[in-house]
Image (cartoon, rainbow, N blue to C red):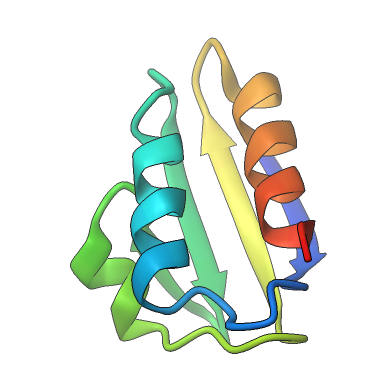
Length: 84
């Protein structure tokens, strides 16, 4: 399992379209993928879970991956939230 704190640099945060794209990316991996904000952890493969966190730009979140492709998953998901 890998946990990594990252700052969301997307100008819109993880709202609407970016949230859907993030979920689609997370679903490409076999690993379990979670995202945590203020100690609330949700399945990052669930659009409803992700939207419930209301992640805005410049907020810090924790990405968690667990599985055989966990390193690739966390690297790609971190890169996604850092795109501006």
